[in-house]
Structures are given as C-alpha cells and as structure tokens.
Amino acid sequence: EEQLVESGGGLVPPGGSLRLSCAASGFTFTSHWMSWLRQAPEKGLEWVATIKQDEREKYYLDSVKGRFTISRDNAKNLLYLQMNSLRVEDTAVYYCARGAGWYNYWGQGRLVTVSS
Amino acid sequence: QSALTQPASVSGSPGQSITISCTGSSSDIGSYNYVSWYQQHPGKAPKLLIYDVNNRPSGISNRFSGSKSGNTASLTISGLQAEDGADYYCNSYSTSSTRYVFGTGTQVTVL
Image 1 (tube, chains in turn cyan, orange):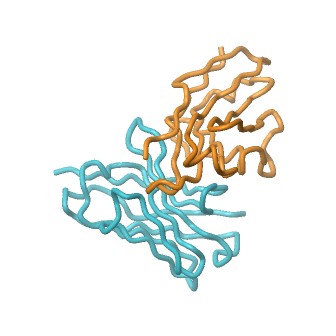
Image 2 (tube, each protein chain N blue to C red):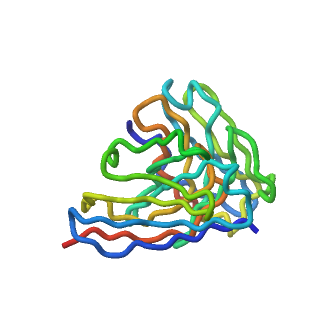
C-alpha cells in the first residue's frame, strides 16, 4: 500500500528555520516526481515546491523562492522541505504528495506555526 | 498569479447532479489539458478525483466526471450522496510564475 508519512513541523518564531521530512513506502520512490503543498488555516490549497526524480529539476512558489529548499534522498525514500526565514504567512498544514501537477497520494499533513 | 475561480458553494439533494466550475485563463486551463480535481473532507488530506481534465484514478466512482471548455473546467457529481459533502478544489498547470495553481475551493452541501 502506497504511503507517505510526514514528520517535523511545530512552532517556530518569525525568521526561524524548520525541516519537514516525508517517508515514502509501498511504491518505487525513484520513479516519481514529488511535491510539497500547504493549506493555511481555514484557507485553500497552495502548491509550494516540486522535485524531479533525479533532483535535476526543482520548482518553487514565488513567495518561498530563496527561503525554502526541496530535496530528496532516493536511497532512503525520503523527501525534505527545508524552510528558512519563516514568516507568519507561512503558517499552514504542509502536505507531501506524489506527483507533479496532479497528486494521487498525500501524506496526513504536518502543522507549521510561525508565531512569536 | 491569482487562484483559479470557483463558486464558494454548491448544493444539491441526494440523487441529483451538480456541476462545479473552475475558471482560469489562456495561461492555464485554456492552453493545457492538465486540470485535476480534489475532494477534501474536514481535517483530512485531499483526495484526487480527476486528472488531465477527464481521467479518473482507479477506485474513483464514475459518478465523478470532468470536462473543459475554453478557459473553464468543470467537475460534475452525479447521483449525489451524503458522503459527497466536502470541499472541492481544481488545479491546473500554468505558464505564469506559479507553475501549478489551485482554485479557490467550493463547499458542496448535500441537502
């Protein structure tokens, strides 16, 4: 059974850093693009970043460019999102998902709260 | 890049059909057949219903169907059931600076 399990997240002050991890299982991780998406409290979905299987292509939402970095460890079936210079407006539930453009498997989501 | 435009809410009675629209532009929906639709129940992760405009993943009921005309995509739910009450989001590839843009979301209420 395909599964994505996120970890990390929590409360961080503005300007702080946090790393999210996503463990993939039940499918061939190296065959798929992977993405991070987020949903602010009581708001809609927003795409954040996407990475190709070999990491040669990465795409970011404009508002996170230069602050967030998506990466993956294909040997360990892990996806990461390093978030630096966090802002209050980055507060959201962050989901990892399989795919680029359409996402057929999602993690359960991790809440990131940026507040002083 | 602004979000794709969806109606805030749509309602219907059990057994009826409803359609949710998703309006974009020539930079996204109008030029590419990369539209997907998601269902999200409160507190849950989204679930893929439709990809590439009108394709259903395995396991998704054929009561859900997608289409596109010009800059507008649509999701139709036929034979509405109580469990269809949820939020629905469209998504499209875009040539704007936001590579993948979501719709504003539609709350479906089953009366």
